Image (cartoon, rainbow, N blue to C red; front, side, top):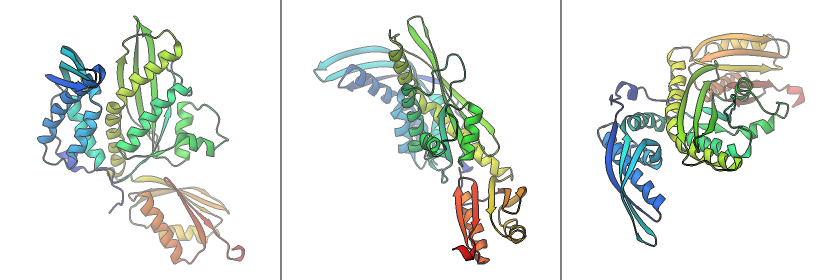
Length: 373
């Protein structure tokens, strides 16, 4: 049995179809400010919609946790609202009553996706970086862009439990890599450092009629075979247009951050499904296995007799075979940890001295000569 299981297919076989409809609800909110009262009203509206859907499902193990996550990002599920009544009841108490339009279909989709993500037992390695590849894109390397990327990172790591590799740290460890990377170069770099998935963040915006119209998008690529997993986009508008450029950028970033959770949920589901399909198709996960400085002949025989017959093996291809190095592309249904463990066990049975190293899907074993220990 595989050690890592990215999702349980049971949920796909038992998903209830709910039409993508909107619902108008009248709710009240109380807070210490007008904005706080309005936010609490949004949360009340979304809590009702999310609660009803969760209660109709008997297989939701993490129901309250999922409901809390949805409600925490309530503004993203309210497509419109009308203030029916509001008043200041005291110095620190505000009351508001609204007629809100709640996107039930979107909530239902995200409840299903969160259920899958929260039952995920594996932790795929992900790198997240910004891109700005068209005229309306806000530069991903300016300081103001950092909070948006940080928000995406927090959602993927803290909410969905992906193993997010820190982009800045990775770049610092590879000083030979050029400054700003384009999309293709960044994906290649992500694969090189052992990531399984790459997520690209882009923000487009432009002033229009005294406001800013924009969209924030997330794209994902499976790095084992450079397979494009999909893109999620959310549009937004600001309520006004600041005069200063840096203030416009900050306002735009803050509006975009409000949309991150919803599109992250949708994209994360595609990412996990994509990894699972890679295994289900009996193609296995692609690994790079390298033996360095092993005695030639011995290591080829070891690979043929021990490694190529391991459980989970699908196929392999020798990429490089020299006096100093044997490098093999190896497809297996095992997780990286389990495959690494099995190869080390086989090497130990040979009583060879070696140094092992696991970096994502790159497995390296370096021969230690007995006379130079």
